[in-house]
Length: 621
Image (cartoon, rainbow, N blue to C red; front, top):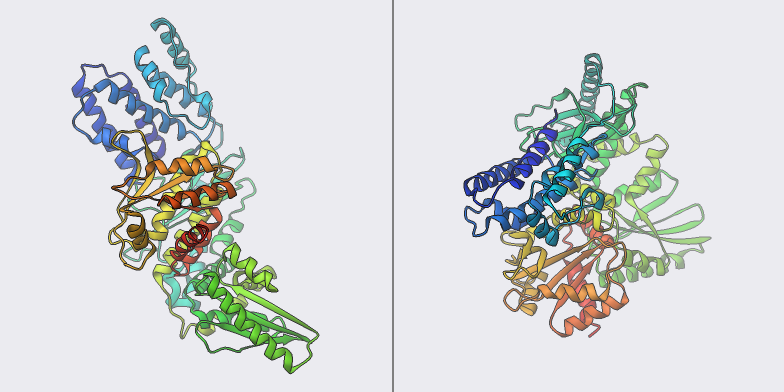
């Protein structure tokens, strides 16, 4: 039995135990609460399963007092049933053919509640991703309820997929291949980029490899997790165990106190034995060069990125030269054949519209100067970004006749023709002066993972908790360093319990000139309220207005609204009306969030975007 299954079934058993507690069994009630608290704490500490219990749930299970046992019991059962049911979906757990088995066990336990308790529960029931998991809660007699519960009992039959587990020989074969490839990986990195070695994903990291179930009846999945290795032990461990009940990607499969530094998942076609191609895609030279590319771009300064772009264009037949000594303007000019080119390379830059206008005007001046020297056949203007630019910035350049290019695309052209070594050779020639920022590498890994999770998170009510979890992590990733002490709470109810805020952050800002300081002064924002809306469409005006119910004189009137598509023109008008009433609502959509993460990755302060959003609202008043 896998560790994940053990913990899930223990939580299910405690849910069943809670449903059976009677109104006079106070000792049993508090003992069961303590067991639940300890179990949930272990799950979170070991990062075993994604749970989204509310702060009110944690208050209940940790409180050693209660004035109403039955009411508290129903509240706890509501949350436990919801979490156990949500875990049965692929966003939380991966397993085969046991959805019915576990849903019947949950519903069987739920019907331990009395008819009056079920009636009270129905008034507050939390809806799961698919309503068919929720049984009928209306019963005229106890016998009807008991009959339904008995039906759930006899339906508890496992129908898991029959799949041959890997043999001892297969595990040894996997172990041999992985260890051999890892040694080649480490040897190549040490021989070529020794002082960068610790920044590579699998170098001097503790590596755990797991063989898990997969959707196809003929395949397995291989999960590769890396963990810190304080003693420098860079060994690889292949667990000789088949994992048929596991958490979603990024969670631990065993009781490990750290979260994975990185994880890699791939299919394993054991009948075709594709291990060579799998390990090559993870540990091969091209994979190393991909890692090197991310390390270099994330840590390079403006000059180094400028020279990188110049080199890769020159090997394509261009003749480009640096034409600006300014630290703020990396400009390349030159030609290919009879055509003239001007390239603006933007790496560590301030991406507000005023700065962009300045860049463009300076380039147009350079353009005029070069066009006066010679009658070129054609003239091209390019802007080269090292990270994904905001759409408005792209459009600004395109409207001024620029083509948009990304550094990653320039390098990938060589990768696509099996020439990734040219990038490796280039970096090796620059290593004498190149410096690595380890914090930036951590930001790169974290930021890319957040972007990927956001992209994979589906819209709609079914996935609201996943979206909320991702957004909470994103907000901390982007802004935690702007506060003296990043203090927050999740799913917080007001004292009257009539409003629930998704996330609140104590606005103990560091810098008096920051955006957080401005809204503290202008909107009394002692607390910042952040709302998450996982809608598939734009946020409507009434949703924007309803968000203002969280504003209070004592805590301030500033709200940040995160959603997938952002606001439409009517809801933006509502935002303008609200700011006239001294209520600030700033809307961020997926595109905004991804752009901010990319800026954070390269060490830029993305807080100016919130300032710009506020300015866009204020100028409409």
